[in-house]
Image (tube, rainbow, N blue to C red; front, side, top):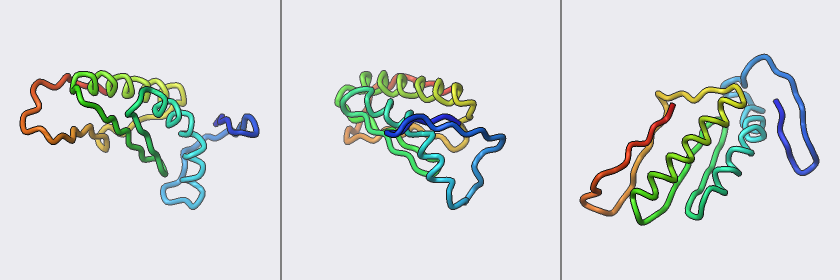
Length: 115
């Protein structure tokens, strides 16, 4: 594990993941995921990312659906690259992309691919 904070780089060598329900697990995961959350939040105006204890959400706010889809696809690609670089995996059975809109008819939505 390698993470960067205000003090400097922190190195730790592990051979297992974090235990489910462990008291320290949320803190350790936050240290690792911090770089991903910062990158996602800097993508564009209207992109918000939050994470806690191995779970995360990316919220993209916009007016033009095709632009929102393009930004989301870029975010998903960045998440894939980050997970691959850190030798982690996304549980696709627990992953959802949801569109929230006030519109009655949304028109044609671009396909967003994840892995």
